Length: 180
Image (cartoon, rainbow, N blue to C red; front, side, top):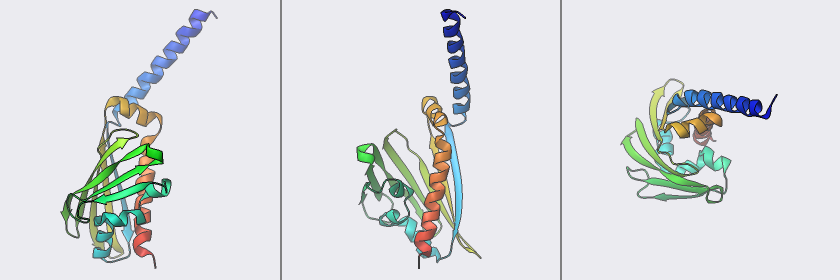
């Protein structure tokens, strides 16, 4: 096999990989992840654990992953406009989440502004419903991205990581409320 044929084969394989990756990435330009957990506690207790951003360190999966993360709550905690800022991984993770909507004891809407390690503006909507087993919390996460970002999310399996992190957060929320 000549050197020219080797390079041609590598080039074709690379083009197929990129083409397949872009095809798969097109399905990741818009991601929605819905997770649920049922928590034994009062509606007020569960709702307030999410509504008051000063409680977030008790159930943040990001703080578990990066215990050295610096955090700050700005604005009037528990109200629309309150923000939870983070700076982690030695300055490599930076952003904030903001409460944008509250329907007391039923719904909390949050918008994130992630500046590092990538730029994104995902949303987290929390729905609270009383059931016979406890308070069912539904987290509806949404993020939009461009094709290049989606390609890298596909390449590194980011959606599976997001799903695991979101579930970890809900499990930690359950533990924080049900803690004796």
